[in-house]
Image (cartoon, rainbow, N blue to C red):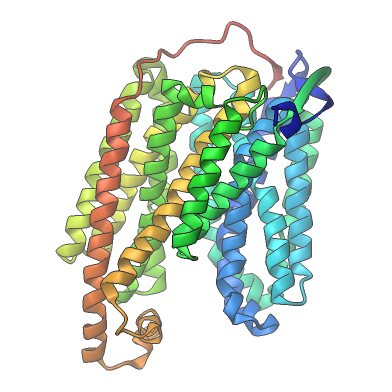
Length: 500
């Protein structure tokens, strides 16, 4: 079967920038609102889930409400990047926003757990476009040095949203209804859409394109299979299926004229290094954020507030370092920041692995997480900007989305795989109900000696988990060492006439 038989061909309108006036401050506000909305959704729903289960039932599907959102948002990221290069950022951003808001409203109106899962999938399909296209828009309207400072602002907004999500979720559930954790997205989304529609402009011209539907289907199937396998859903079946679909995807993408994820782009040294390092650092970040609170609560007998405060310092260090990196970037270039950032991540990951064995206090862990966030903010800002500057306008959407996609998929796979490591360390003899009691206030009233017997194997298992996280951080640093020398240059021409 030829390439044309695998694709749907028709004329489309390619949107490219052509000297319209874009009002940068108000465009940025619209973009930041969309980022805030997506970040808050990741944490606010988890807080309300016990109440949701109480009202709708279906506790056996509890995990699917979050899992299906992660699945559809991850799968759709590279697809959004590609179509934003074909059709322009604005219309695809508004499409993603519309899907997210429709999914939010439908989720809030759900009457059964099955309905909620379906509508959360729709919401995730919209959320997959919010972050990559937002960062791509910033890449289009700002110069590299300015963009690094914007990365710090994005990190700060993400951190505030992530930290305020659980608190806001608790207030909404207590004073209104769990349904409002979804309805609250609507005013943010409508305001964001209004600002982007009004103040971000693109000029459309007609061009011939063929959409790579076959490649998109194969990529989607392989990602779904990988995430299911990493989450321990029949890995003996799903992981081989993922490998076969991925091989078929590579074969298709090497032959089509408009690949959904360009293999030529990924073979560039900057993209290859950014993808590998991003996947590794995503694994470190996601795994640490998931498993360190478990250690604080179940092993150190800390409160949920202490557990949250321990990891939230990462979200403080990230934007501070990202902003500083923006100021240093014109002087240092990309490579020193990438290497320094990943070097800090390695040091802090090893410090966590050692500190957990030595019984480090919550304060020490929080300081270490602040430093880890600073390292990630330094390296990530330089990586994203370098990726964007290595691509033309017509590639920038898929390049940005690919970098974020690999970071997300690396985190998802690592969390699932390390969960299997922890489960193996605990063995089959410790009931899950007893482990859950360790996370309750006053440890659920269980006998202190029994709590010690349970927390011992859990502590040993978490030691193994953080040893592996440290090894993954070393892999990220090794990838960073391969980052090519790339100078920071001003663009010859700016694709937008911008208005302050």
